[in-house]
Image 1 (tube, helix red, strand yellow):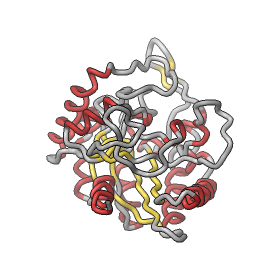
Image 2 (tube, one colour):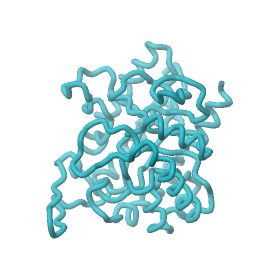
Image 3 (cartoon, rainbow, N blue to C red):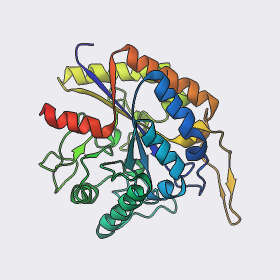
Image 4 (cartoon, rainbow, N blue to C red):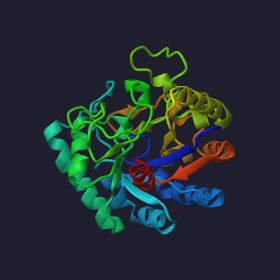
Length: 299
């Protein structure tokens, strides 16, 4: 590969199956094994905690920090803080005027647990917005890894967004980092393009399948003379055995099969293969805060 390859791994530390259960079995049981893999591969990464996840799982937060990784923010309660991209039952977006207070509260909770104020953020489901980015800037954040490349399909490299439209370039102090997607394939998902997204291909299709998409994306970026930045998102609950359904007394949650497919031991195997493959092609791993500082100095 003719250019440097920058790799960012971010774990969204949230309730199991996203917003659809109140449990934290993934955070409780997968943090240590995942950190062991990071140690084994000699890489670092960022763990984005919701304020609620940090408050209820302080040992996880402290272990992440103690072992040299970054603790970022993932909203207060895994809520829709930004602009929703598609409808989800019972998911109601915050009003723009509510965003700042929620992010401020999340930031304070994470700082209280960790002793360090978070400076990087990712919106749940990658549903960011101009209100989110502007609030992050006011709260002292330096980076936001929320841009869903698969949906907006305009930004393929990190940029500083406009305070009037977060999807456009401007002079915000918050570095926006797009999440890698397959921009070469022809989508069969209409205007949404969700099948271009890289998640959760590492476990549903395997690391080798995803690595082929990575290589094609690198060629795509090289053809546009753009820097090669590969930002991935994962969840700790992908590394535990999940139920096919969850009964809550008045309703039953039955996740789509791709949500639960190959979670648990298989995910660990494919995760290690993915890291090995990225290292093999020359990938350099960064925490989000370190990458933001590097990008700023790079000019």
